[in-house]
Every structure is written in C-alpha cells, then in structure tokens.
Length: 258
Image 1 (cartoon, one colour):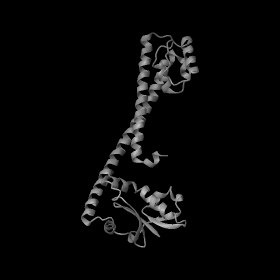
Image 2 (cartoon, helix red, strand yellow):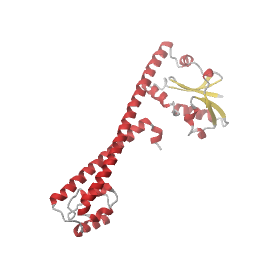
Image 3 (tube, one colour):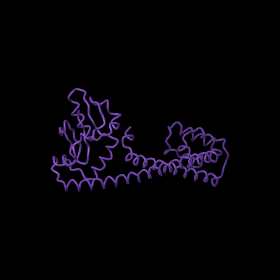
Image 4 (cartoon, one colour):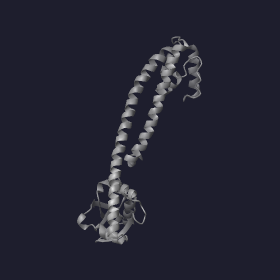
C-alpha cells in the first residue's frame, strides 16, 4: 500500500516508511500564504501536486491501494485513477520533523514555518468568513432587486401600456423598458434596442397607428422617466451578479467551473 501525506512541506508518497515520490512546496518556493491556501483547499479538493503523484503511481498498470487524507474529496475523480483509495493511517505516517530533514530544513526553520503557515491559515479562514458575508449580502441585494423590478415592470406596463398597448406582446421586460424610455410612440429611435429590424419596423408602424390613449408629452415623460430608472435597476442587477460570480469563484472554484 502507498500512502500520500500532504502537509506544510509538500505532498509525499510513502511506502514501507520511505518516501518514494514527492512534490515539495519548499523547492517550489511557495510563500507561506500560498502554502496555507493549498492546505485549506486540500481539505475538500485534490491538489495538483497530489494528482501528479497519484498519476505517477497509477502508471504501473495494476490496481493498488493508496491511503490519503479524506478520500471523500476524490469522490468525483476516483474513476480516473487505476487505484483504490482508503483513509490514511496516522500511525504509519512519517513525522514532519523527519520529512523536514529531507528538505534541508532545520528544526528552528520548521518551527518558524509552522507558525507562519498556521497564522496564514487563520487569516485565510477569517477572510473566507468575510467573503461568505459579502456573498450573502450580494445574494440578498439581487433578490430584493428582482422583487423591486417585478413591481416596477408591472407598474410601467400599466402606465405606458395605456399609451402604447401594441408593445405589450414584448415579453422581455428590459426591452419593453428600453422602448418605453424613448417616450413618444410616434417618434421612436430603436437603433439601440436588441430586436430584429423586422420587429423594429413593425413597432414604428404601430406607434404611428396605435389605438392607445393620446397623452401630452408632459404625461409621456413620466413613463419615460420610470422606464429609465427600471433600466438602471437592470444594469445594477447585472453588475451585482457579475460581482457575485467573482466572489463565488473564490468560495467554491470547482462549482463555478461547471
């Protein structure tokens, strides 16, 4: 059986108490912050260094057993490797002090590294908690915007719809608001609207022959102003959603890749 140990010094493949393969964080000159992030990531995911070692071991062409910390984190990748995974046995692990000697790291240097990495882990965990709070606030804000937009869309349809009922067939609320923001149905410049030229021409024709209520410009401008604010809300929602994607990419990078 092979055993893969991952610690602040790197990833090490062990058999019969001896290291047979390794990917050292020290030789890669990773910062303490980088090592901390890797160790946090490795709690639920497979590190690239671990994957390299497993791939190297599996090239033997024979199915064998590999003990690794929390094999559940390989749940979605088990079939990719020609090995069986089990939970690592602490009693068979090589002490960190012995591994540090192989990486030419003295006892005092190891202590300093342990302290620095643990400090960075604490900082990162606190930062992740803060990021979680940011994500929650963004999600709540987007939900509230959706509620507000539903109400405003309904109100805008009631207001502008009495004046230009022919465009009620437009199901995209943002496009509807874009047309309403132009105001006067008899003088519509639809060049910036995301519709086909055929539909634009039809809307222009309907604007000239509409059966809707005739309103003075001072009343039409109210609907136009409301529509402009609705469009601002849609823009705000889009930007918040983009921001949320960036935040979620930090919290759960694997899910965001799907």
